[in-house]
Length: 196
Image (cartoon, rainbow, N blue to C red; front, side, top):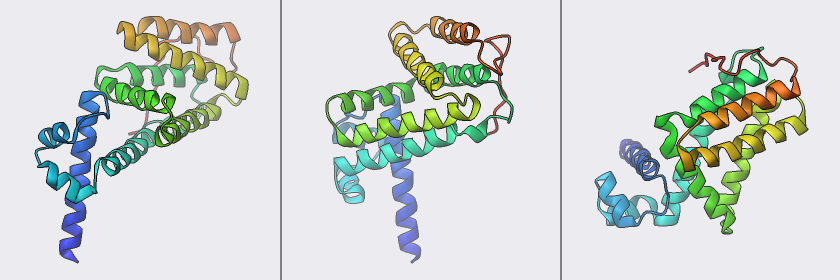
């Protein structure tokens, strides 16, 4: 029993290192050799622990989903937070320098979805569902939530290409000032304290 727990803990820690490697690379398409070298284990041991590349990718995507679910949970924002403040906080989190690898990894998985990967499509659908759930809590208007989400995603693509978060921030702020969203704050730069 103790050996099983140690083995499980070792596998979980190894999976954490694999996900960290994918995040650093901003891609999931690393060879087993690259992955093994980065996490400090032999390719044979990676296969021993996970049974192959597909299992490593699957478990890493599941772990990433769990992390993103926790980061973008509606409960991470105080009750009564304005929709604009929520979107501004999400933009800050998404474009923070330390989030770049995760953002690139999510985009890599989106590329896989566009190329027909069923698992990557499921990952993308789950991310969309989480974002809609979060936004609906603070902006209970489905068409506006869809519009915010589309604008946000387009702004993220532009940010990845240019490295400049300001145009996206301005576009999102204009959306709220034009729509006069109920509960919107007077400034797009309002910061929100989120619960950790």
